[in-house]
Amino acid sequence: MLKDIRPALVLFGAFTLITGALYPAAVTGVAQAAFPRQAGGSIVLRDGRAVGSALIGQTFAAPGYFWSRPSATAPVPHNAAAGSGSNQGPLHPALAEAVAARSAALKAADPGQTAPIPVDLVTASGSGLDPHISPAAAAWQAPRVARARGLPRGQVDALVARHTEGRQWGVLGEPRVNVLQLNLALDAVRKQAAPGG
Image (cartoon, rainbow, N blue to C red; front, side):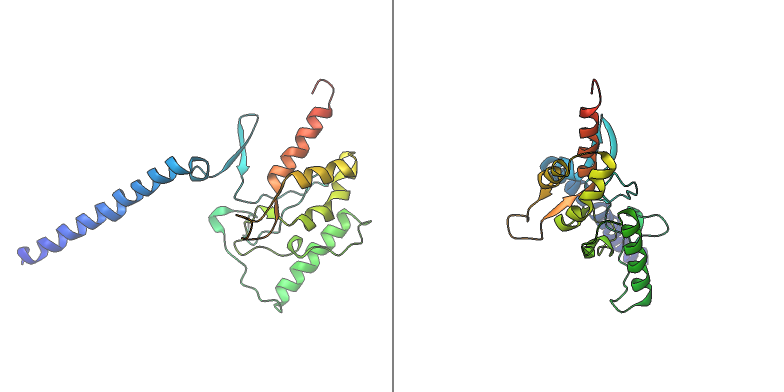
């Protein structure tokens, strides 16, 4: 019986070593060598301190910041450990309630804004973690951000344009704005404007 079990145990050990250690180590090594920033989580630094990842959204609620897409993760928004879609169809009552509540919050934050709210400001992405908004969503929020920060609207619009990423390789996806990086750029403007900044 031992001679029948021994080959199975040897194969089990060999495949565990190959698929559980050697292959992951090789893939990690190649990724670290070829794409070190992405393999490290695309961490965004401010003053040498990690403030987030360029790949995972964050929640911003102050009027002087651009707000991210809503998150589908619960109970903590933008929780990468719980990333998933809501799986609610367009006719689901809970989705309709969430969209209505998000629309009301956006309108309350900027009652003078009468333009239609871009859909990505009231619906979560497929993962619930998207760090980007559309240029239209950024433009919709620009008047509120400019007022809250006491900045000229043109300066805020220029920052949005500077932080708008085009389609990948010119054809894939849609133009997008990374909310964390745009908000960090806004904070940098405030620092530059401060006396001695």
